[in-house]
Image (cartoon, rainbow, N blue to C red; front, top):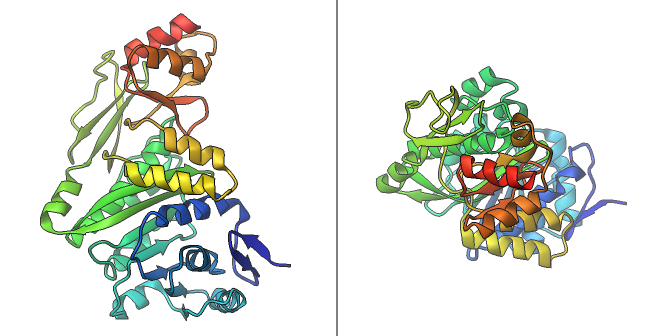
Length: 358
């Protein structure tokens, strides 16, 4: 009896397959459902082939290449492709070797490695083109979330945050790295979707060729500044840290970056992908719905942290959100951290709202 997911039936064989990573695969199918006319796919870390098989069967992508450096994984992928009635090329080859010899440029490139995408992203850029959709995962979340700051500086060229904002900071560091590599190939990026889930961060972006696009992308990079006293968060575009104190209370602020300070979603793709996700009856529809409703603001606030530093009793996130909306501010939950909210409300006014409810 094989493992069933979407329209795919998989025999794991000796390749790695994590059933707990179904949500990222479901969401990737939903993201790609928003685009038509994409004909060529590279599943660059195919393992069992489950992602590429689902793209082929559920989205109708007919021209796919499956790549894996592990010989046993390639054997497993070939069997699974055959069992699912899919004809495609399966190569037992490294990403570096393939990218440096391939003459093909792909419409969709999926990179879902064990650990960091950093060692492979540069080479994959060689086989992208204007309009290529990249889907990139990182499972080295201890690095991106600041538990291993030196590793983050080494791998991503960024200083992480190791506090309640670490998930979004890590996601923005990952996007920022992808933006810098893309710019080296004279591409800008349009970020169309991103999320943090369990041990994984996953982003999707479209390459846009040209000097103006790459320059515009670079000008979306900068630093975040998190106050350890009042928990205010500020951001500044640029490649040099420019702030050391909190503008809200005057205390010292911890800087993090370089990171992406642009939007985490394309609004139409987010709406349509989450709608597709729910209509398809995929598990974890609650997370998809939460993502679809998140306010478009830089960073979120952890209510448990705010009430703790103010020595106040806990408050209901729903009541805080309602009160903020009544006051004319945008506000929503976030999928990245429990009991945390996104809002356009400044920290001082937010603390007043929390105090009135507490």
